[in-house]
Image 1 (cartoon, one colour):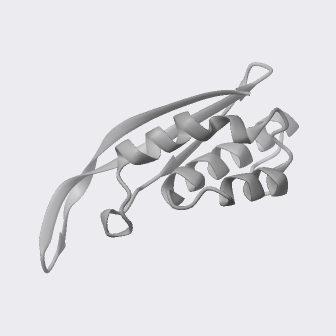
Image 2: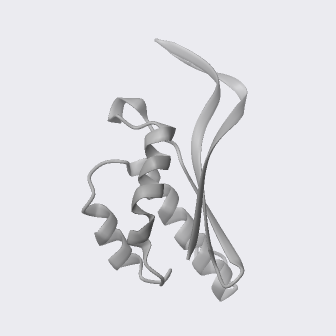
Length: 113
């Protein structure tokens, strides 16, 4: 599988406001997994209070992408390998989403099936 990761800034339709902050954008990690000319996409939103950032999520994907192996249908095995590395849940969520999207596209069915 081929793996690409990038940081994207999403402009929000409305300002997001909580008691201590407000923002008009959200930075996320987007990943793309390709196999046999088919690409699956996933996204993760790191949360600072968990010591995650888009930069750390991207670094995780780039450093540990080899843990995915060559079989996008081996979800349990991939999950176990990724779980051995602590933290970076947003990066792992982006990879999981991309794997599910890729599976659906390879099978010609919606990912929810």
